Every structure is written in structure tokens, then in C-alpha cells.
Amino acid sequence: MRMIISGGGTGGHIYPAITIAREIAKLAEHCEILFVGTKQGLEADIIPKEGFDFTTIEVRGLERKLSWKNVQTLFNTAGGVWKSIRIVKAFKPDVVIGTGGYVCGPVLLSASLLKIPSMIQEQNVIPGITNKILARFVDKIAIGYQEARGYFTEYKPEQIIFTGNPIRPEVMSATREEGQAALGLSPARLTLLVVGGSRGARSINNAMLGVHKHFSGNRRIQILHVTGQNEYNSIVGNNKQAGIDISSDGNIIIKPYLYNMPLALAAADLAIFRAGAVGLAELTARGIPAILVPYPYAAENHQEFNAQALAKQGAACVIADKELSSAILIDTIERLLDNPEALADMTKKSKELGRPQAAETIARLALSLKKP
Image (cartoon, rainbow, N blue to C red; front, side):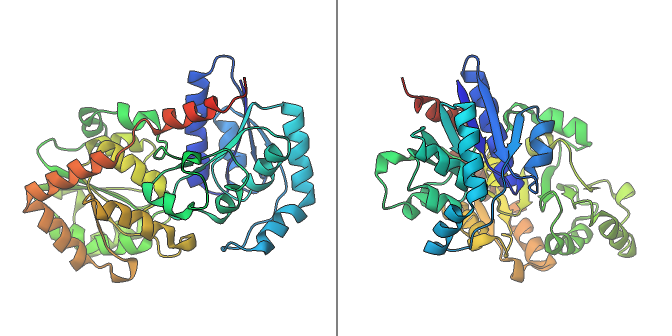
């Protein structure tokens, strides 16, 4: 089995690609995988470190709307298209997969021109512009949310497969006890996990200052707050100015970054998160109820749609970034603490939405495309 996978620009496109690749490698005997990305994207650093073969093309970005100009941009990026064709011809893949980002354009178009089976994996409720265009050329579209199906109405129903979004296997293998021990958490308290993304989220961090003060020393709850590297010192300093002694109060842990997020997820009873597709896939796979604050500047406002998909099913509460405050967070947390039945119901609904086997489902779908 030989496979090309393309996806890049952000971790939201890269890490699902890696997860799918690892699952394919487990399922397919004698599998060779080549990643195609750009020199400028995060993939240029991440993919080689993950041990995969990696090559690059040059390609221009697309407008944030579906237009003929974007189609022209894809075809006018002659260097990227021709290099993609050369890469595909030389590697001779059985299947080509795209996980998002404009680098996928030339690679998936090349596969289509060369009659090689291909598929795209769309993580969000609102498809990215590249995937909207590529959907016209691929054999299968794997969607992370049922709601995304409504944005691919012009295609045959059998072409669109609801798989969920792929998550790392460690997310499911980590145990609650391991997470509590590794992070110094008490088994007797409810654990609130607060994460704004790898770089942090200033609005969430600022609102959490009042939350820290309100719940400091509270015996019912403990807070594990991951601030992001750039925000850590200011958050710790502001806590000191507010008179919160984290070391003595004992129920607030502040970290700049977590290198083993699966352990934190395993220990969490409630989460405050942005609404990126990968993060939500991990939350629901573990059945963690959430207070979601969608990033307001995401392309096509896709995080808002991701968050609302969970809220409609009763798995999350959604707070708009512009409305976020300490008071609103405190009120929401208190309401859930005082109503364990509601929290338990959110946990149940979250788990029902989870797709822990999504990576295997996508991998088997990709393998099924190989020509006899």
C-alpha cells in the first residue's frame, strides 16, 4: 500500500493527518506513506519529527469564499501543480488523502487528473474553501460532523461519509487515576480543565482571574488552567496581585503548557475550551461536558458552528467571546456544580457524540478506495 497524505498550515489540519497515517500503517501491511506540504507551514517542522517522509510544493493561498477566482488560483499555481504531478507520478500512490489547508489543492487535483482514488477529510461543520472546491474531484468526503453534510448537498449521499474526527489513541488509553497522579489532582474534587489552545486565549485567561479568586480554597472543585506560554507569567503575576496564594490554597494549578494533554482529559470532569474541531473531538470521545468560547476570528466563523453543534445536543454551553466575563463563567460553573444531574446529562450527551474510533473508520475508508 502506498499513500500520499496532504494537509497543512495549522495543527488542526496536520495532527488529524498524522493520526490517520498511523492508523493506516497499523491496518495495511507494508505501507509506505508520503506527506506533501509547504516549507512555510507548521507541517515542515512537525511531520519529519513524527518520522514520516515529507516533501514540499509551492502554492498560493485561497480567498475565504467559493469563487471562480479560487479555481483560477489553483490552476494558475503552475509550479505547485506540476510539481505535485511529478511527485504523484514518481511515488505511484494507491490513494491520496487531503486533510485541509490550501496545500491540498494541487495534490488532490493531481490525483484526480491521474485517475488515482482520493478523499478529503473535513473536520469542521463549515467546510474550508479548499475542501469545498476539492469535493468536486475526489471519490469520498469524510466529515467530522453530521451537520457538515448540509454543505455538500450537490454530491451523491454515498460520496459523503460521517466518520467523526480522528483523535490520538492516547486520549482513550489514559486513565483517570494516571491523570490525577501525574498532575497532582485530588480524586475527591471535581476537576475543571481550562485550555485556550497551544498559544492560550487571552480573553479566557483574563476571565479566569475572577474565577480563580472566587473558587480559591473551594473544597468542591479544583482548577487546572493551561494558559499558553506567552500568557503564563502575567496570569501568575495577576493572581499574586489579587492575593491568591496558589501554593497554599491547593485547588488551583496553573501551567504554561501541557505536553501530555490526554492525562489532563482523563482527569477532567468539566472543560472550558475554544471550539476547534480536534479539541472537541477529544472532549466528546472522553465524554467531557464543556463550556465553549469559540474563537471569533476563525475562518468562516467555523468555531461558532462547531460549538453550536455540541450545544444543540446538550453536551456543552456556549459563551460568545465578546460576552465572556468572570461573572458569566462563575455563574455557569456554579450552576453546574449545584446541579449534578445536569452535569451528568451533559456528560452522557457528550459521550454519545464522541467518535473514538474515527481514525480507524477513516483509515478503512481510505484503504477501501484502492483499486483491485
